[in-house]
Length: 183
Image: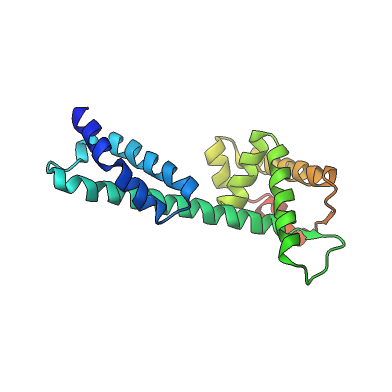
């Protein structure tokens, strides 16, 4: 415990600066904190020599940053998928401000759903899991998961309607696993 406390006191600022050079400022503190959480869990792997401790922490931080970047890419993919819903009345040649407003509306709609519906949509849309794999995560049958996915999608579209976002969703917009009930 005392060695970990010394390690934290000696290295936290350097790990924070390492993270700040790789992610935005708000995320850097989270990366540094997560690095030390992982280090605490792996305290048995802490090198015996003090001069090897910082590189060991940097290795952990590098993996935490990579996870953070993957999370960001998944978030972007989810927003892209949600943006693929064609918006009635919008020109094909729209400007970036319209995209920002639309993305904001999609995020707002997603936040209005229950945590269960959000998780279902994120597992399928963000994590890119099949119905059967999402069912494993939520510990239910693939048939139950298909029903949950369809209902969550319908509620999402209803919230978009409540927000006055007109959509036209065709069969091409429905993931094939949901359409066909595949597992």
